[in-house]
Amino acid sequence: MLVVAGARPNFMKVSALWHALSALRHPFAPMLVHTGQHYDYQLSQVFYRDLDLPPADFSLGVGSGSHAEQTARVMIEFERVCLEQSPGLVVVVGDVNSTLACALVAAKLGVPVAHVEAGLRSFDRSMPEEINRVLTDAVARFLFTPSRDAVENLRREGVPDGSIFFVGNVMVDTLLRFRQKAEALAPWREFGFAAGAYGVVTLHRPANVDNQDVLLEILEGLSVIQDQVPLIFPAHPRTAARIRAFGLGPLVARMRNLRVVEPLGYLQFLSVIGHAQFILTDSGGIQEETTMLGVPCLTLRVNTERPVTLTGGTNRLVRTNRQHIIEAVRDLDSAHGCFTDGLPEFWDGRAAERIVSLLAPVFS
Ligand code: UD1
Image (cartoon, rainbow, N blue to C red; front, side, top):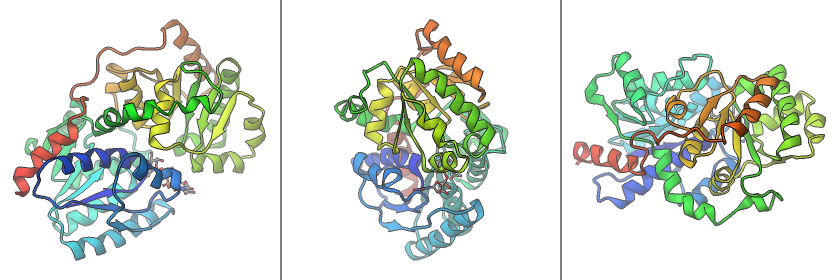
C-alpha cells in the first residue's frame, strides 16, 4: 500500500491514517510517498516532526511549477514507484495537485485508489482544488467522506453506493491526538500577545493573493482591524511573494500590530488558533479546525466545500472587500464570537480507524 502526501494540508490527514495503520494489526505494508509539491521545511518537514511521521519511503522531489508541470512531474515520478512496487492500493488525501496526479497514475495502472476526504464540493471550477476533487473521485474505488453532504454530492455524480463510505474527518483525528501536546507550547506569548486577545490571519488562495486589487482590499481591511486587535499573520510563501511583487510591503510594514511570521508548524499553529479571538482565513482545513476548537472563523471566500462548518460549526463566509471584512470582525463582538451548535457527525477522532477497518477485510 502506498500512502501519498504532497502539500502541507496532506500531512495532518496522512498522520491520522498512519497512526491508525500502525495501531491495528493489518494486512498492508504501508509505505509513505512524499511528492515534494511542498518542500520548504516549514511547509513539509516540520510536519514529520510534529505529527510523529516516519521519513518518507519515497521522496519524489517534484517541486513547484505550473499546474501542468507539477502534475505531470508527479505523475512521471509516481508511475516509476508504482511500477517498481506493484502496490495493492494507493491512498490519496485531500485535493492538491499531488492527490489527482497519483490517483490518475494508479487508476491507469489498474491499482485501486482510496480517496480520503472524498465528495467535498465548492461547485466552483475556477478553484484548481475543485477540479482535483472531482477528477480524483471519478477514478477512486474507495471514497471516504468526512460529512453527509459529501455523500450526497457523490451520489448526485453517479458514484455507486458500494464505493462511498461515510467515515468522518481525519483532520479531526489528528487535532484530537495532538491537541494536548500543542497546548503546552503557548507560542502567542513569544509574539507578546495574551490568550484570547489576538486574531490570526492566513491567506494563500490564488483568487485572493494573485489579484492585486483583491489583496489590497484584504490588507486594507486588516490595517483597520489591527488597530483594535493585534493580529498574527503566518505568511505562505505564495502570499509573501505577491506582497513583494505588488509593492505592498510598505503597507504591511506600517501595520504596527500585525505580526508577520514564517509559516508555523502544526503544533504551534494549533496552539495559536486554539487561543485566538477569531481567525481570518481562506484555508479549507482551518475552517474545520476552528469548528472543533469552538473559535470563530471568518472565511474570506464566496463559497466553501465544507458547508458543515457553516451549519454546525463556527465558520462564516465573508466577501473579500475591506468593509465586509471589518464589519465581520466587529459583528463577532455582539455574537460573543461563537456560533457552534454541536459538532458534525463522526468528527470524533476515529475516522482513520474506520477507514482501516473497512479496508482490512478487502485486502486480507
Ligand atoms: C497548494 C495547494 C492548495 C493548498 C496549499 C496549502 C494545489 C493546486 N494547491 O497551494 O490546495 O491549500 O498548497 O499550502 O495543489 N512555495 C515555496 N515553498 C514550498 C512550496 C511552494 O516557496 O515549499 C512557493 C512557490 O513559489 C510556489 C508557490 O509557493 O510556486 C505556490 O505553491 P504551490 O504548491 O503551487 O501552491 P500553493 O499555493 O502552496
